[in-house]
Length: 237
Image 1: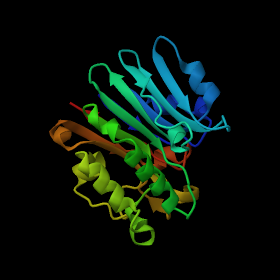
Image 2 (image 1 turned 45 degrees about the vertical axis):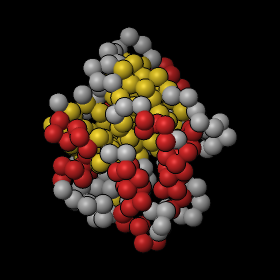
Image 3 (image 1 turned 135 degrees about the vertical axis):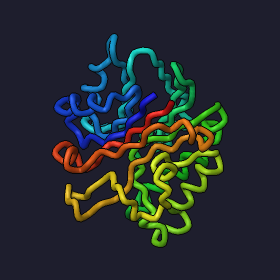
């Protein structure tokens, strides 16, 4: 199984060939348009879109034939995070729960993104009780801001997911810590290579660690033409 997360920065209809080059079975794609994602549904590919009133940019999930994804019921229709942190029951060659993420700002600078995820996970512990879980997407979260955002910071988010037995695939394979100074960034602010951040993640069960064949972060030289984010791709045996 190959799973990719890539914030496409809009206009996915112009970038679909680039996304397809990753050969993902399931792709979490923040910042894609509702109309394009809905028109993708067909024999070879199925798709889901979630977002607010601004339809050109929302959270998309795409999957190939042979897989079935069904959204797990919303916890509270009044909660803004229900648009941006979306759980799915995944059936196919691998059965698991996928929580797709495009974390949104909830005030207080960069700390607001982290707070939204912590609220969503605290409000929905049942998401993690359905079997194996993968959490993937653009978290907009980094250890770089731990001191500023304490106690509701990235370190707390990593611990919370760790309590459910989940680890970041990149950090598992690289042996790096969540410091904010990761050697392979996933985002370059304003597409400036001198402003790197690691904001995109695939968290998976730690017990699957020996099954991880590949964790690849796209090179900025290949991807900055298309987005300020680079994709994170994980392949499991």
